[in-house]
Image (spheres, rainbow, N blue to C red):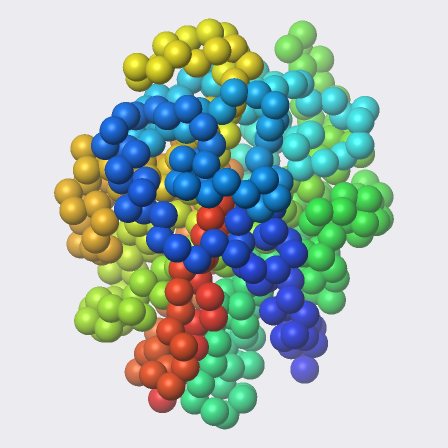
Length: 417
């Protein structure tokens, strides 16, 4: 039995990767409606509206969305592709954080590269960017993605029932094992990382010993990359990263790497399984798998909104935005903007390629997007290769899309063979 197989405490996996569970309480995990018709109406009325996305959608629950930033500030939501794209590309006017990063304070995801702007963000991102470029995707596949996918499918086949659940039992494990493996975290601690995502001190108890060990003996992992990296300051001086700087990178990458791709993979799988003719076409012509994944990203991005802070008074697409206000870039409705895509509400894998905003845009475009694509390509491709006649289980409740600020599928019950 491999270490990955020993990890498969399915009950714990299901608890930690439940869209309706405690980790999702702050982002509207219990939301079960389809918000896109309301978002389409809002987009038609104006590019920018005053208010948060959930308020504008008709949800006024002060307890369901505690994850939103800066409740005391004015809030605006942006709905068109053109307006969202313009905001992403102006990182000076639309800052990623209301304050500077302070490495002397307690390590946290918000106190990391995610919150940096301008030259500081460029210099820190440049340290890890080479590990996430498209040419490195196969390193990730060889290093951990392929082995994880193969082990999970073996687990499904060994059950001998011709049935399985794919969203949590398959999709959820792939990203968390990929990112923890890339950090040199032992397989049997991977779920501990997921459990500790909202408890930085607990997460640092796992990370700190690895950082110390890699300072003594660097290896072939991301912590070693950070330990060896030298940061160039604006005055030209160079220095190795401090423990606090490495911790900030680690917290951000572990949170991002383990928390989004599993939901997007579940969305893509559900979209295909609900359209058997499309699934058959992808099975017959594997060149269609990439376009199918890209269409899932456009059609239903798992994170339909990202926030920015306005640094000066400005008029933006017909709306005055005061300095200090929060602007929510609503990529969900922007990705279905009929000004950019014909029949935008249809899931169509044969669309002419056109970039969406599923991974954001501008200087802060998602660092791990190529790894996420590699995870989805490897995972879904392996399912098509190894589970003959893969289809939804007609005797089980069909999957549904739920969640608000983090969208995903419910259980995906399938039959095969």
